[in-house]
Image 1 (cartoon, rainbow, N blue to C red):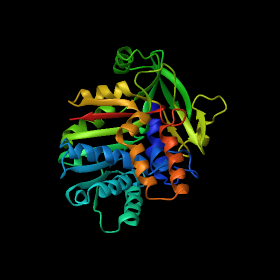
Image 2: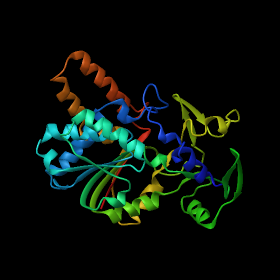
Image 3: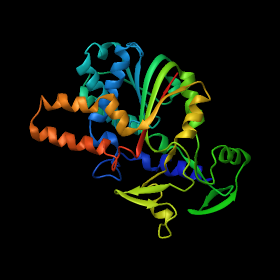
Image 4: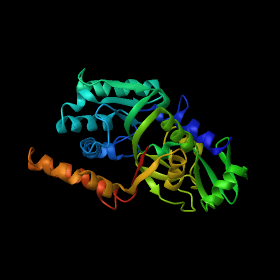
Length: 328
């Protein structure tokens, strides 16, 4: 099978890695911005609130998260919006796009734990089910969770019995590689359909996504495996794929030029592309921390400030992760 099919089964099959819930945080395989600090969601919500105030977003529209894991980010955003303007909780609609029933149940349980019956969150299996006039859509580390093909010198990777070999690439992949000046690296599968479906489902929208990667191809393989906070290159000679298959995360650096092509080809405009650090500061994370300092103890303030450093420090997440904002 092609590597993209192998990766799809690795992550999303009945025994796939993403069927598990204890994969993020200290006891899991990796950290995310969401698991680092609730202020990540608060700052994104603060930016959304500014769009609402400036009438660039609709007060009776939808706030949607795609790839919500247990729902932490959406809940953090709702909490901040409530602190900005209580009436927004009544006028806005909230939703999670999640196709796995067991993940939906975990999300529902967490949302109820946070808000009880006060907040109604709608669940959709697919973005096409959400037919809306306006939506503000957020995703964190979803673009790297698409399957990908591995491309090298006009050949693509094939997997049989967890062993990788190479065969001649199809014409469409060769054309993609030529257009993006790619000699070696990953080609994500599914961005184009993802953008197309989002455009079909919603008349006007803002889509903001955070992920690690670069604006252009790097002409090297970035694909790797995360296991208990250890990074294992896929092509490590000592790595046995059958031992980590469906038991650890597999991911790659996002080529944001491919993402941009996918969205702009169906009518989106690129509003902003920048580092996570610059985006979060622009969204107001430092001001939010300052407000928090006035209402809490010095110990709590210092603890949260340290967590925010993880989000914006150039040597941790700040420069490695990027934010891209599309509008339609």
